[in-house]
Image 1 (tube, rainbow, N blue to C red):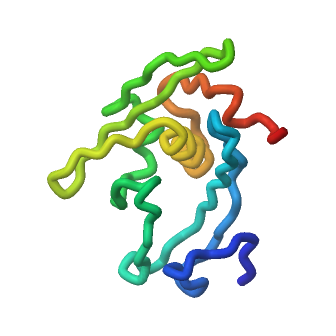
Image 2 (cartoon, helix red, strand yellow):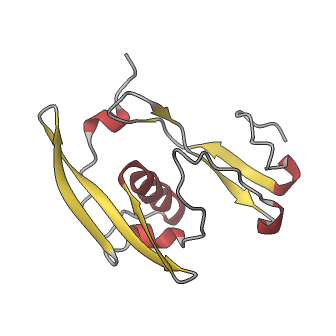
Length: 135
Protein backbone atom coordinates (compact mmCIF):
# COMPACT_ATOMS: atom_id res chain seq x y z
CA UNK A 1 0.00 0.00 0.00
CA UNK A 2 1.31 3.46 -0.83
CA UNK A 3 0.65 6.38 1.48
CA UNK A 4 0.36 9.99 0.37
CA UNK A 5 1.92 11.16 3.62
CA UNK A 6 5.09 10.26 5.42
CA UNK A 7 4.09 8.07 8.35
CA UNK A 8 5.69 8.45 11.76
CA UNK A 9 8.29 5.80 12.49
CA UNK A 10 6.04 4.51 15.27
CA UNK A 11 3.42 3.41 12.71
CA UNK A 12 4.18 0.52 10.37
CA UNK A 13 2.28 0.37 7.09
CA UNK A 14 1.25 -3.24 7.79
CA UNK A 15 -0.62 -2.01 10.88
CA UNK A 16 -2.69 0.57 8.94
CA UNK A 17 -5.25 0.56 6.16
CA UNK A 18 -7.71 2.93 4.53
CA UNK A 19 -5.56 5.96 5.25
CA UNK A 20 -6.82 9.12 3.59
CA UNK A 21 -6.54 12.86 3.92
CA UNK A 22 -9.73 14.51 5.20
CA UNK A 23 -9.54 18.28 4.62
CA UNK A 24 -7.15 21.15 5.22
CA UNK A 25 -7.65 23.29 8.31
CA UNK A 26 -5.89 26.52 9.28
CA UNK A 27 -5.48 28.10 12.68
CA UNK A 28 -5.40 31.82 13.50
CA UNK A 29 -1.63 31.86 12.86
CA UNK A 30 -2.25 30.38 9.38
CA UNK A 31 -0.66 27.06 10.30
CA UNK A 32 -1.96 24.29 8.04
CA UNK A 33 -3.32 21.13 9.66
CA UNK A 34 -4.16 18.17 7.42
CA UNK A 35 -5.97 15.42 9.35
CA UNK A 36 -5.27 11.89 8.15
CA UNK A 37 -7.62 9.07 9.08
CA UNK A 38 -7.12 5.32 8.94
CA UNK A 39 -7.72 2.02 10.65
CA UNK A 40 -5.14 0.94 13.21
CA UNK A 41 -5.34 -2.85 13.37
CA UNK A 42 -3.18 -3.43 16.43
CA UNK A 43 -3.32 -0.80 19.18
CA UNK A 44 -0.46 -2.50 21.02
CA UNK A 45 1.83 -2.02 18.02
CA UNK A 46 1.16 1.73 18.04
CA UNK A 47 3.67 3.59 20.22
CA UNK A 48 3.15 7.29 19.52
CA UNK A 49 5.81 9.84 20.37
CA UNK A 50 3.88 13.09 20.81
CA UNK A 51 5.27 16.58 20.52
CA UNK A 52 5.11 17.68 24.17
CA UNK A 53 4.56 21.29 23.10
CA UNK A 54 1.34 20.29 21.34
CA UNK A 55 0.02 17.09 22.97
CA UNK A 56 -0.77 16.83 26.66
CA UNK A 57 -1.98 13.21 26.69
CA UNK A 58 -2.81 10.29 24.42
CA UNK A 59 -6.02 8.37 25.11
CA UNK A 60 -8.85 6.59 23.31
CA UNK A 61 -12.24 8.27 23.00
CA UNK A 62 -15.31 7.03 21.11
CA UNK A 63 -15.71 8.90 17.82
CA UNK A 64 -19.50 9.04 18.09
CA UNK A 65 -19.24 11.25 21.19
CA UNK A 66 -18.36 14.15 18.87
CA UNK A 67 -21.83 14.03 17.33
CA UNK A 68 -23.70 14.11 20.65
CA UNK A 69 -24.68 17.13 22.70
CA UNK A 70 -23.56 15.38 25.91
CA UNK A 71 -20.49 16.43 27.88
CA UNK A 72 -20.11 19.33 25.45
CA UNK A 73 -20.07 23.04 25.90
CA UNK A 74 -19.37 25.87 23.49
CA UNK A 75 -18.12 29.42 23.72
CA UNK A 76 -19.00 32.07 21.18
CA UNK A 77 -15.89 33.76 19.86
CA UNK A 78 -15.11 36.41 17.28
CA UNK A 79 -12.04 36.82 15.10
CA UNK A 80 -11.66 39.53 12.48
CA UNK A 81 -15.40 40.25 12.59
CA UNK A 82 -16.46 36.61 12.18
CA UNK A 83 -18.42 34.97 14.99
CA UNK A 84 -18.02 31.24 15.57
CA UNK A 85 -18.43 28.58 18.25
CA UNK A 86 -15.47 26.97 19.96
CA UNK A 87 -16.46 23.49 21.17
CA UNK A 88 -15.21 21.71 24.30
CA UNK A 89 -15.85 18.02 25.02
CA UNK A 90 -15.21 16.54 28.47
CA UNK A 91 -14.18 12.90 28.46
CA UNK A 92 -13.27 10.62 31.37
CA UNK A 93 -10.94 7.65 31.04
CA UNK A 94 -8.59 5.88 33.44
CA UNK A 95 -9.65 8.14 36.35
CA UNK A 96 -8.64 11.22 34.36
CA UNK A 97 -10.79 13.96 32.85
CA UNK A 98 -9.68 15.21 29.45
CA UNK A 99 -10.90 18.28 27.60
CA UNK A 100 -10.89 18.01 23.81
CA UNK A 101 -11.40 21.45 22.36
CA UNK A 102 -10.93 24.00 19.57
CA UNK A 103 -9.42 22.74 16.32
CA UNK A 104 -8.99 19.18 17.65
CA UNK A 105 -12.69 19.05 18.54
CA UNK A 106 -13.67 20.50 15.16
CA UNK A 107 -11.60 17.91 13.29
CA UNK A 108 -13.19 15.10 15.31
CA UNK A 109 -16.72 16.49 14.78
CA UNK A 110 -16.09 16.54 11.02
CA UNK A 111 -14.50 13.05 11.02
CA UNK A 112 -17.44 11.62 13.02
CA UNK A 113 -19.93 13.26 10.64
CA UNK A 114 -18.19 11.62 7.68
CA UNK A 115 -17.82 8.19 9.29
CA UNK A 116 -21.39 8.04 10.66
CA UNK A 117 -23.01 9.89 7.73
CA UNK A 118 -24.83 12.32 10.00
CA UNK A 119 -24.46 15.86 11.26
CA UNK A 120 -23.81 16.63 14.93
CA UNK A 121 -26.79 17.10 17.28
CA UNK A 122 -25.70 20.72 17.87
CA UNK A 123 -24.85 23.81 15.87
CA UNK A 124 -21.24 23.82 14.65
CA UNK A 125 -20.74 27.39 13.43
CA UNK A 126 -17.14 26.88 12.32
CA UNK A 127 -14.84 29.88 11.97
CA UNK A 128 -14.17 30.92 8.38
CA UNK A 129 -10.41 30.96 8.91
CA UNK A 130 -10.27 27.18 9.50
CA UNK A 131 -11.08 26.52 5.86
CA UNK A 132 -9.57 29.54 4.13
CA UNK A 133 -6.93 29.28 1.46
CA UNK A 134 -3.41 29.91 2.51
CA UNK A 135 -2.09 33.24 1.28
